[in-house]
Length: 393
Ligand SMILES: *Cc1c(COP(=O)(O)O)cnc(C)c1O
Image (tube, rainbow, N blue to C red; front, top):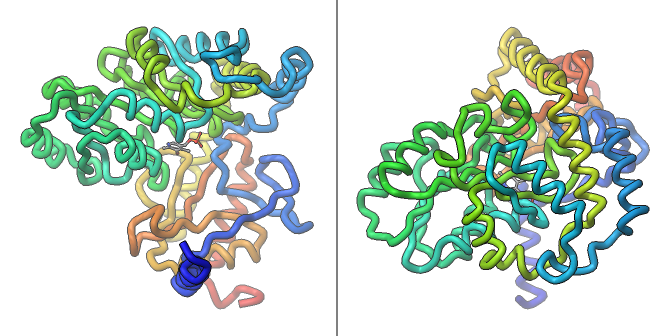
Protein backbone atom coordinates (compact mmCIF):
# COMPACT_ATOMS: atom_id res chain seq x y z
CA UNK A 1 0.00 0.00 0.00
CA UNK A 2 1.29 3.48 -0.81
CA UNK A 3 1.58 6.19 1.82
CA UNK A 4 -1.45 7.90 0.35
CA UNK A 5 -3.60 4.78 0.70
CA UNK A 6 -2.61 4.46 4.34
CA UNK A 7 -3.48 8.02 5.27
CA UNK A 8 -6.74 7.84 3.32
CA UNK A 9 -7.66 4.67 5.22
CA UNK A 10 -6.87 6.33 8.53
CA UNK A 11 -8.85 9.44 7.61
CA UNK A 12 -11.89 7.35 6.79
CA UNK A 13 -11.54 5.45 10.03
CA UNK A 14 -11.67 8.79 11.90
CA UNK A 15 -14.58 10.32 10.03
CA UNK A 16 -16.73 7.22 10.54
CA UNK A 17 -15.99 7.13 14.29
CA UNK A 18 -14.31 3.75 13.93
CA UNK A 19 -10.80 4.87 14.81
CA UNK A 20 -9.36 2.59 17.46
CA UNK A 21 -6.90 3.74 20.07
CA UNK A 22 -5.38 2.20 23.13
CA UNK A 23 -5.76 3.04 26.79
CA UNK A 24 -2.41 2.78 28.53
CA UNK A 25 -2.88 1.24 31.96
CA UNK A 26 -0.33 1.92 34.67
CA UNK A 27 -1.46 -0.72 37.17
CA UNK A 28 -2.40 -4.40 37.44
CA UNK A 29 -5.69 -5.75 36.04
CA UNK A 30 -7.93 -5.00 38.99
CA UNK A 31 -11.39 -3.45 39.18
CA UNK A 32 -9.63 -0.14 39.79
CA UNK A 33 -6.85 0.88 37.44
CA UNK A 34 -4.76 4.00 36.90
CA UNK A 35 -4.80 5.71 33.50
CA UNK A 36 -3.00 9.04 32.96
CA UNK A 37 -2.73 9.46 36.73
CA UNK A 38 -6.47 9.08 37.25
CA UNK A 39 -8.23 6.16 38.98
CA UNK A 40 -11.00 4.42 37.07
CA UNK A 41 -13.40 1.63 37.89
CA UNK A 42 -13.19 -0.87 35.04
CA UNK A 43 -15.93 -3.04 33.54
CA UNK A 44 -14.11 -4.10 30.38
CA UNK A 45 -11.73 -6.82 31.46
CA UNK A 46 -12.08 -10.54 30.74
CA UNK A 47 -10.41 -11.23 34.09
CA UNK A 48 -13.73 -12.80 35.15
CA UNK A 49 -12.54 -14.46 38.35
CA UNK A 50 -10.03 -11.83 39.47
CA UNK A 51 -7.08 -14.20 39.09
CA UNK A 52 -4.81 -12.03 36.91
CA UNK A 53 -3.14 -10.54 39.98
CA UNK A 54 -3.89 -13.25 42.56
CA UNK A 55 -0.97 -13.53 45.04
CA UNK A 56 -0.74 -17.33 44.66
CA UNK A 57 -0.63 -17.07 40.88
CA UNK A 58 2.05 -14.37 41.06
CA UNK A 59 4.11 -16.37 43.59
CA UNK A 60 4.02 -19.52 41.44
CA UNK A 61 5.03 -17.46 38.42
CA UNK A 62 8.03 -16.07 40.32
CA UNK A 63 9.11 -19.46 41.67
CA UNK A 64 8.83 -21.06 38.24
CA UNK A 65 10.83 -18.25 36.65
CA UNK A 66 13.60 -18.98 39.15
CA UNK A 67 13.47 -22.66 38.28
CA UNK A 68 12.90 -22.58 34.50
CA UNK A 69 14.07 -19.12 33.53
CA UNK A 70 11.85 -16.91 31.39
CA UNK A 71 11.90 -18.12 27.78
CA UNK A 72 11.00 -21.65 26.74
CA UNK A 73 13.79 -21.53 24.16
CA UNK A 74 12.15 -23.51 21.35
CA UNK A 75 8.94 -24.98 20.01
CA UNK A 76 7.27 -27.92 21.79
CA UNK A 77 8.50 -30.42 19.20
CA UNK A 78 12.13 -29.34 19.42
CA UNK A 79 13.21 -28.81 23.04
CA UNK A 80 10.68 -26.29 24.41
CA UNK A 81 8.20 -28.73 26.00
CA UNK A 82 8.85 -28.71 29.76
CA UNK A 83 7.47 -30.61 32.73
CA UNK A 84 5.54 -27.43 33.54
CA UNK A 85 3.70 -27.59 30.18
CA UNK A 86 3.10 -31.32 30.56
CA UNK A 87 1.65 -30.91 34.06
CA UNK A 88 -0.66 -28.13 32.91
CA UNK A 89 -1.92 -30.19 29.96
CA UNK A 90 -2.75 -33.02 32.33
CA UNK A 91 -4.53 -30.67 34.73
CA UNK A 92 -6.56 -29.15 31.86
CA UNK A 93 -7.55 -32.61 30.60
CA UNK A 94 -8.76 -33.46 34.12
CA UNK A 95 -10.65 -30.17 34.48
CA UNK A 96 -12.49 -30.66 31.19
CA UNK A 97 -12.96 -34.42 31.54
CA UNK A 98 -11.15 -35.11 28.27
CA UNK A 99 -8.48 -37.70 27.40
CA UNK A 100 -5.89 -35.07 26.74
CA UNK A 101 -5.28 -31.36 26.26
CA UNK A 102 -2.75 -29.55 24.09
CA UNK A 103 -1.35 -26.09 24.87
CA UNK A 104 -1.18 -23.39 22.22
CA UNK A 105 0.40 -19.93 22.30
CA UNK A 106 -3.01 -18.26 22.49
CA UNK A 107 -6.62 -18.74 21.50
CA UNK A 108 -6.23 -17.20 18.08
CA UNK A 109 -3.49 -19.67 17.24
CA UNK A 110 -5.36 -22.61 18.73
CA UNK A 111 -8.35 -21.92 16.48
CA UNK A 112 -6.26 -21.37 13.36
CA UNK A 113 -4.14 -24.44 14.02
CA UNK A 114 -6.92 -26.85 14.91
CA UNK A 115 -9.34 -25.91 12.14
CA UNK A 116 -6.68 -25.85 9.44
CA UNK A 117 -5.29 -29.19 10.64
CA UNK A 118 -8.68 -30.89 10.66
CA UNK A 119 -10.16 -29.62 7.41
CA UNK A 120 -9.04 -29.01 3.84
CA UNK A 121 -10.32 -28.33 0.37
CA UNK A 122 -12.77 -31.22 0.26
CA UNK A 123 -14.31 -30.42 3.62
CA UNK A 124 -16.94 -27.98 4.88
CA UNK A 125 -17.09 -25.75 7.91
CA UNK A 126 -20.34 -24.31 9.24
CA UNK A 127 -20.21 -21.66 11.89
CA UNK A 128 -22.43 -19.27 13.78
CA UNK A 129 -22.53 -15.80 12.27
CA UNK A 130 -21.47 -14.26 15.59
CA UNK A 131 -18.44 -16.49 16.13
CA UNK A 132 -15.20 -14.86 17.20
CA UNK A 133 -13.03 -13.32 14.46
CA UNK A 134 -10.34 -15.97 14.96
CA UNK A 135 -12.80 -18.70 13.94
CA UNK A 136 -13.71 -16.85 10.77
CA UNK A 137 -10.03 -16.41 9.96
CA UNK A 138 -9.38 -20.06 10.78
CA UNK A 139 -12.04 -21.17 8.30
CA UNK A 140 -10.47 -18.96 5.67
CA UNK A 141 -7.01 -20.36 6.33
CA UNK A 142 -8.20 -23.97 6.29
CA UNK A 143 -9.02 -23.88 2.57
CA UNK A 144 -12.31 -25.66 3.32
CA UNK A 145 -15.62 -24.44 1.95
CA UNK A 146 -17.30 -22.53 4.72
CA UNK A 147 -20.63 -20.94 5.44
CA UNK A 148 -22.09 -19.04 8.36
CA UNK A 149 -25.51 -19.84 9.77
CA UNK A 150 -27.72 -17.21 11.35
CA UNK A 151 -27.09 -16.71 15.05
CA UNK A 152 -28.25 -19.82 16.94
CA UNK A 153 -30.57 -20.66 14.04
CA UNK A 154 -30.36 -24.44 13.82
CA UNK A 155 -32.93 -24.70 11.02
CA UNK A 156 -30.63 -22.61 8.89
CA UNK A 157 -27.69 -24.83 9.83
CA UNK A 158 -29.59 -28.02 8.98
CA UNK A 159 -30.56 -26.53 5.59
CA UNK A 160 -26.95 -25.79 4.80
CA UNK A 161 -25.87 -29.24 5.97
CA UNK A 162 -28.48 -30.90 3.76
CA UNK A 163 -26.95 -29.28 0.67
CA UNK A 164 -23.38 -30.17 1.59
CA UNK A 165 -21.39 -32.74 -0.36
CA UNK A 166 -18.27 -32.41 1.76
CA UNK A 167 -16.00 -35.27 2.77
CA UNK A 168 -15.64 -34.14 6.41
CA UNK A 169 -17.84 -31.55 8.10
CA UNK A 170 -16.98 -29.34 11.05
CA UNK A 171 -19.57 -27.34 12.98
CA UNK A 172 -18.01 -24.55 15.04
CA UNK A 173 -19.50 -22.22 17.62
CA UNK A 174 -18.55 -19.99 20.51
CA UNK A 175 -19.76 -21.56 23.78
CA UNK A 176 -20.49 -18.09 25.17
CA UNK A 177 -20.66 -15.38 22.50
CA UNK A 178 -17.97 -12.84 23.19
CA UNK A 179 -19.83 -9.63 22.33
CA UNK A 180 -23.38 -10.75 23.23
CA UNK A 181 -22.86 -12.88 26.32
CA UNK A 182 -25.51 -15.41 25.35
CA UNK A 183 -24.78 -19.12 25.24
CA UNK A 184 -24.93 -21.50 22.28
CA UNK A 185 -27.44 -24.37 22.43
CA UNK A 186 -24.74 -27.01 22.56
CA UNK A 187 -27.11 -29.93 23.18
CA UNK A 188 -28.92 -29.02 19.98
CA UNK A 189 -25.71 -28.59 18.00
CA UNK A 190 -24.35 -31.84 19.38
CA UNK A 191 -27.32 -33.84 18.12
CA UNK A 192 -27.26 -32.10 14.74
CA UNK A 193 -23.57 -32.96 14.46
CA UNK A 194 -24.29 -36.55 15.33
CA UNK A 195 -27.13 -36.82 12.78
CA UNK A 196 -24.94 -35.38 10.04
CA UNK A 197 -21.80 -37.25 10.96
CA UNK A 198 -20.03 -33.94 11.61
CA UNK A 199 -17.49 -32.89 14.22
CA UNK A 200 -18.54 -30.27 16.77
CA UNK A 201 -15.96 -27.74 17.91
CA UNK A 202 -16.67 -25.25 20.70
CA UNK A 203 -14.60 -22.17 21.45
CA UNK A 204 -15.18 -21.76 25.18
CA UNK A 205 -12.96 -18.72 25.74
CA UNK A 206 -15.66 -17.07 27.87
CA UNK A 207 -17.09 -20.21 29.48
CA UNK A 208 -14.04 -21.99 30.80
CA UNK A 209 -13.47 -21.24 34.49
CA UNK A 210 -16.77 -19.35 34.74
CA UNK A 211 -19.38 -22.00 33.96
CA UNK A 212 -19.72 -25.49 35.43
CA UNK A 213 -19.58 -26.63 39.03
CA UNK A 214 -15.78 -26.93 38.96
CA UNK A 215 -15.18 -24.25 36.35
CA UNK A 216 -14.95 -26.82 33.53
CA UNK A 217 -16.89 -24.43 31.30
CA UNK A 218 -19.84 -24.89 28.96
CA UNK A 219 -19.16 -28.63 28.50
CA UNK A 220 -19.25 -29.31 32.22
CA UNK A 221 -22.22 -27.00 32.74
CA UNK A 222 -24.23 -28.93 30.13
CA UNK A 223 -22.79 -32.37 30.87
CA UNK A 224 -21.39 -32.73 27.35
CA UNK A 225 -18.75 -35.43 27.25
CA UNK A 226 -15.93 -35.81 24.78
CA UNK A 227 -18.16 -38.07 22.70
CA UNK A 228 -20.78 -35.33 22.30
CA UNK A 229 -18.40 -32.41 22.08
CA UNK A 230 -15.20 -33.82 20.61
CA UNK A 231 -13.20 -30.60 20.06
CA UNK A 232 -13.13 -28.22 23.02
CA UNK A 233 -11.06 -25.06 22.92
CA UNK A 234 -10.42 -22.87 25.95
CA UNK A 235 -8.26 -19.82 26.58
CA UNK A 236 -6.11 -18.99 29.59
CA UNK A 237 -6.02 -15.21 29.23
CA UNK A 238 -9.57 -14.63 30.46
CA UNK A 239 -10.97 -16.37 33.59
CA UNK A 240 -7.61 -18.06 34.23
CA UNK A 241 -5.96 -14.65 34.36
CA UNK A 242 -2.74 -15.76 32.65
CA UNK A 243 -2.03 -16.37 28.93
CA UNK A 244 -2.30 -19.12 26.35
CA UNK A 245 -4.95 -21.56 25.21
CA UNK A 246 -5.65 -25.25 24.76
CA UNK A 247 -7.59 -27.78 22.75
CA UNK A 248 -8.97 -30.76 24.68
CA UNK A 249 -10.30 -34.01 23.27
CA UNK A 250 -9.45 -37.57 22.38
CA UNK A 251 -5.97 -38.99 22.20
CA UNK A 252 -6.32 -39.27 18.41
CA UNK A 253 -7.35 -35.61 18.13
CA UNK A 254 -4.41 -34.39 20.21
CA UNK A 255 -1.90 -36.59 18.37
CA UNK A 256 -3.24 -35.31 15.04
CA UNK A 257 -2.83 -31.71 16.18
CA UNK A 258 0.74 -32.41 17.29
CA UNK A 259 1.45 -33.78 13.80
CA UNK A 260 -0.48 -31.31 11.66
CA UNK A 261 -1.39 -28.05 13.46
CA UNK A 262 1.04 -25.55 12.00
CA UNK A 263 0.43 -22.93 14.70
CA UNK A 264 1.45 -25.59 17.21
CA UNK A 265 4.50 -26.82 15.34
CA UNK A 266 6.12 -23.66 14.05
CA UNK A 267 6.10 -21.45 17.10
CA UNK A 268 7.94 -21.08 20.39
CA UNK A 269 6.32 -22.76 23.40
CA UNK A 270 4.76 -20.55 26.07
CA UNK A 271 7.11 -19.58 28.90
CA UNK A 272 7.07 -22.49 31.41
CA UNK A 273 6.44 -20.03 34.25
CA UNK A 274 3.17 -19.07 32.56
CA UNK A 275 2.20 -22.74 32.58
CA UNK A 276 3.01 -23.01 36.30
CA UNK A 277 1.12 -19.81 37.10
CA UNK A 278 -1.83 -21.19 35.15
CA UNK A 279 -1.72 -24.38 37.20
CA UNK A 280 -1.99 -22.25 40.33
CA UNK A 281 -5.00 -20.44 38.91
CA UNK A 282 -6.56 -23.74 37.83
CA UNK A 283 -6.33 -24.94 41.44
CA UNK A 284 -8.06 -21.77 42.63
CA UNK A 285 -10.74 -22.20 39.97
CA UNK A 286 -11.48 -25.70 41.25
CA UNK A 287 -11.13 -25.02 44.96
CA UNK A 288 -12.88 -21.67 45.25
CA UNK A 289 -16.39 -22.00 43.82
CA UNK A 290 -17.31 -18.88 45.81
CA UNK A 291 -15.78 -16.83 43.00
CA UNK A 292 -18.34 -18.17 40.52
CA UNK A 293 -21.11 -17.77 43.12
CA UNK A 294 -20.17 -14.17 43.85
CA UNK A 295 -20.01 -13.43 40.13
CA UNK A 296 -23.49 -14.92 39.61
CA UNK A 297 -24.77 -12.79 42.48
CA UNK A 298 -23.28 -9.65 40.90
CA UNK A 299 -24.86 -10.53 37.54
CA UNK A 300 -28.27 -10.97 39.19
CA UNK A 301 -27.88 -7.74 41.13
CA UNK A 302 -26.75 -5.76 38.07
CA UNK A 303 -29.55 -7.01 35.85
CA UNK A 304 -32.16 -6.43 38.52
CA UNK A 305 -30.93 -2.88 39.20
CA UNK A 306 -30.90 -2.01 35.49
CA UNK A 307 -34.37 -3.43 35.03
CA UNK A 308 -35.69 -1.22 37.84
CA UNK A 309 -34.20 1.84 36.16
CA UNK A 310 -35.56 0.92 32.74
CA UNK A 311 -32.09 0.33 31.32
CA UNK A 312 -32.56 -2.45 28.77
CA UNK A 313 -29.70 -4.95 28.72
CA UNK A 314 -29.30 -7.68 26.13
CA UNK A 315 -30.40 -11.13 27.33
CA UNK A 316 -27.39 -12.75 29.01
CA UNK A 317 -26.72 -14.79 32.15
CA UNK A 318 -22.96 -14.58 31.83
CA UNK A 319 -20.50 -11.91 33.04
CA UNK A 320 -20.77 -10.30 29.58
CA UNK A 321 -23.68 -7.84 29.92
CA UNK A 322 -23.91 -5.74 26.77
CA UNK A 323 -25.96 -2.58 26.54
CA UNK A 324 -27.06 -2.01 22.96
CA UNK A 325 -26.54 1.64 22.03
CA UNK A 326 -26.97 1.32 18.25
CA UNK A 327 -25.06 4.03 16.46
CA UNK A 328 -21.33 4.52 16.66
CA UNK A 329 -21.78 8.15 17.78
CA UNK A 330 -24.16 7.30 20.61
CA UNK A 331 -21.94 4.47 21.80
CA UNK A 332 -18.89 6.70 21.93
CA UNK A 333 -20.85 9.45 23.69
CA UNK A 334 -22.08 7.11 26.41
CA UNK A 335 -18.66 5.55 26.85
CA UNK A 336 -17.04 9.00 27.16
CA UNK A 337 -19.69 10.22 29.58
CA UNK A 338 -19.07 7.16 31.76
CA UNK A 339 -15.33 7.85 31.67
CA UNK A 340 -16.04 11.35 32.95
CA UNK A 341 -17.76 9.65 35.88
CA UNK A 342 -14.64 7.55 36.43
CA UNK A 343 -15.95 4.37 34.84
CA UNK A 344 -14.34 2.56 31.93
CA UNK A 345 -16.55 0.40 29.70
CA UNK A 346 -15.44 -0.39 26.18
CA UNK A 347 -17.39 0.86 23.18
CA UNK A 348 -17.69 -2.02 20.72
CA UNK A 349 -18.18 -0.91 17.13
CA UNK A 350 -18.20 -2.50 13.67
CA UNK A 351 -16.60 -4.61 12.34
CA UNK A 352 -16.43 -6.35 15.73
CA UNK A 353 -20.25 -6.25 15.78
CA UNK A 354 -22.70 -5.77 12.88
CA UNK A 355 -23.47 -2.24 11.66
CA UNK A 356 -26.11 -0.47 13.77
CA UNK A 357 -25.45 -2.81 16.69
CA UNK A 358 -22.71 -0.91 18.45
CA UNK A 359 -22.78 -1.47 22.16
CA UNK A 360 -21.14 -1.05 25.51
CA UNK A 361 -19.69 -4.38 26.46
CA UNK A 362 -20.01 -4.41 30.23
CA UNK A 363 -17.98 -7.23 31.77
CA UNK A 364 -18.38 -8.18 35.41
CA UNK A 365 -15.76 -9.95 37.49
CA UNK A 366 -15.68 -11.81 40.78
CA UNK A 367 -13.13 -9.18 41.79
CA UNK A 368 -15.86 -6.51 41.76
CA UNK A 369 -17.70 -5.69 44.94
CA UNK A 370 -21.44 -5.09 45.04
CA UNK A 371 -20.68 -1.46 45.87
CA UNK A 372 -18.65 -1.11 42.70
CA UNK A 373 -21.48 -2.56 40.63
CA UNK A 374 -23.81 -0.08 42.35
CA UNK A 375 -21.49 2.72 41.26
CA UNK A 376 -21.75 1.46 37.68
CA UNK A 377 -25.54 1.35 37.89
CA UNK A 378 -25.67 4.89 39.27
CA UNK A 379 -23.39 6.15 36.53
CA UNK A 380 -25.50 4.44 33.85
CA UNK A 381 -28.62 5.98 35.37
CA UNK A 382 -27.06 9.44 35.20
CA UNK A 383 -25.67 9.09 31.70
CA UNK A 384 -28.62 7.31 30.09
CA UNK A 385 -31.66 8.44 32.05
CA UNK A 386 -30.61 11.94 33.15
CA UNK A 387 -28.07 13.18 30.60
CA UNK A 388 -28.78 16.85 31.38
CA UNK A 389 -27.73 16.39 35.02
CA UNK A 390 -24.23 15.59 33.99
CA UNK A 391 -21.52 18.00 34.89
CA UNK A 392 -19.39 18.68 31.88
CA UNK A 393 -21.76 17.80 29.05
C1 LIG B 1 -10.36 -13.97 23.25
C2 LIG B 1 -10.93 -14.95 22.32
C3 LIG B 1 -10.13 -15.73 21.49
C4 LIG B 1 -8.66 -15.47 21.35
O1 LIG B 1 -7.97 -15.92 22.47
P1 LIG B 1 -6.55 -15.27 22.81
O2 LIG B 1 -5.94 -16.22 23.76
O3 LIG B 1 -6.83 -13.93 23.39
O4 LIG B 1 -5.80 -15.20 21.50
C5 LIG B 1 -10.72 -16.70 20.74
N1 LIG B 1 -12.05 -16.92 20.79
C6 LIG B 1 -12.85 -16.18 21.56
C7 LIG B 1 -14.32 -16.46 21.57
C8 LIG B 1 -12.33 -15.16 22.34
O5 LIG B 1 -13.13 -14.41 23.07
